[in-house]
Length: 76
Image (cartoon, rainbow, N blue to C red; front, side, top):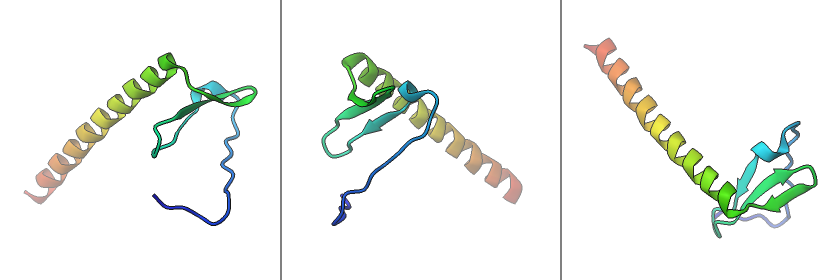
């Protein structure tokens, strides 16, 4: 995992903070936005994030398949 000498601040400006989630890809910790800043995600939020990730993965696979199919049709 890439690391830097200095701490970096990551900021999200939003009117809907609870829709944002941050995931530490080394530890698996999840943090959810709130009106008071970042808070550790509870089990229910973590499950929702997992569901969203699986849906996103399925969409990427479907979109990739469609693109390959379109390319084959154009070259045929």
